Image 1 (spheres, rainbow, N blue to C red):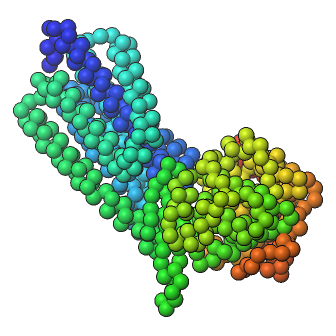
Image 2 (image 1 turned 180 degrees about the vertical axis):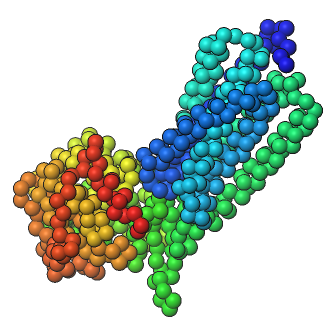
Image 3 (image 1 turned 90 degrees about the vertical axis):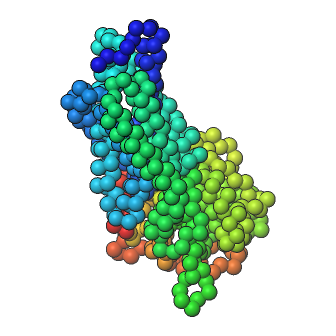
Length: 522
């Protein structure tokens, strides 16, 4: 049946409505793809891998969906409405379902592939049906119709791509953002069908689609109302101790847990997790931070640069030296710094170091900042997240350490947290090799941190003369590190001796491959 197009303004308005629907559906479809990629990045940490899986599976499924839609073209309007309602429901609930699969069922991988395939199948079926609907309004050449449809489709994808990071995530978050997009998707499809193509719907079809629309709306609405409680309950499933703070910043998920250490003990264990990775435990973090900071403070240390360490714990150790003039802390995520400044127990742990007038905090990407930095520092402390993600692997490359050399004052020292030489020996020695190939003489060392296990660092100085692995002549009172402990830290057992592995670079981030392989299963 052909829609009445006797009046030119009427068919032009109808065509505009179809193209608007294409625009909105394309935006929603791209958001679904980005939501799956972002969720995988938060939960798994493998941004490139997650993007490859999602995009590859969805594009393949879109091709299958286009073929599946061929038999549906005889009832294009009803089929389109059913597909849009199904897509709205599944796409809107996709993040919620995958989060549950990750936390409760340990089925995230299969669930991701299945979700990406089904969503891609539905998205792929849209264009052929919309093409038929567009031609029923006013028949035109196939080339012109395709041009109109794909123009609207690609521009809509641009809108979705921009809306996801700059509107949906900041305003609604991932769970509710997907639900909002699902609702928009449903409205766009239903409004088009019930207005422009209402005449093609029989009474039963209109009634059935009306009921289906109400059901989809109620389900999405219920998910919206319960989203917060669901997220809190599901998140707690991922952590051993009670979650006392959780937020998803622009860059990562930040979770703070707190519990009594053991029955009969009054000590509490405060733990910070970023994207699920433990950053510290208040029970033993002093071991890590004393080993990280104090060996590098032997020598001039008036001006200190800290890369990462937005929790303020490294700054706490630095400020134990009264002759420190300035501490510049460069940490990408302002949410971590703000938490360290306002959370009472965390403030007590870091001794309010981030409010000290000698501390300057810059919420910038360390790599980009170093490229334009002009200040000089006596000590540079690289306390950065482990290189198990694409975004952090660049911070463990020859190029990154080369950027650090110009900001070191004469006689300056660099120290790098380098992971575990026991659990991840190839990662550790690749980092040490990268520092050496950037023009530093290195001293590798390691200590025992119960929450992490055997943990390693690399102390370095520009040139051919390695710095001495020793405490400053007049160190402040320390709880863990002594001259004897530090001397022993420079010795590696036979089963964890130096491994000759290649350095890591921006174009060949070997440390990322090593970290993923070695930490798998831990």
